Length: 148
Image (cartoon, rainbow, N blue to C red; front, side, top):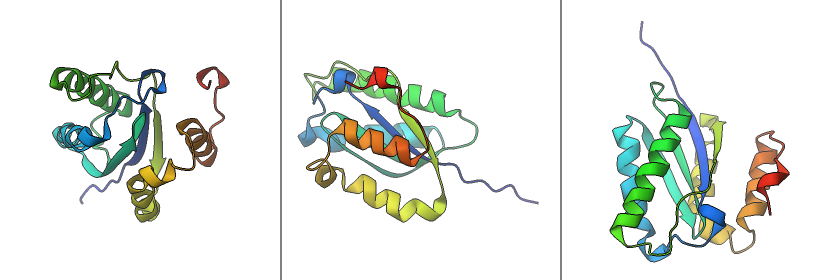
């Protein structure tokens, strides 16, 4: 008998102090670097996208890795790369914490569209408003200490 699994995660994290330090003209290089991290973790990346102060990853995470370990690897490795590449001269690091939401495969197409449309989405909403909406949709009560 074969083992089957599907561990779809919607991950969200922001820059330190939500500063707009992810230069969009170099975002694709950053996303390519993070794609390599995801593949190295034997996971499948469905979509990655964001704006100047945060981004979203939609991935099928391999069950051998804990989400906290996955995120630590993505954040630490990408931070080191961003600083050493000099493509993001104002980047100071990632904020403490992140959003990690398990999702149903049934919602995959909708989630891919959501992540792909981040630039248009943020013409209307700030990160803080978007994040509050996401937390609400996933049944999480936000801790107000982390919202300005």
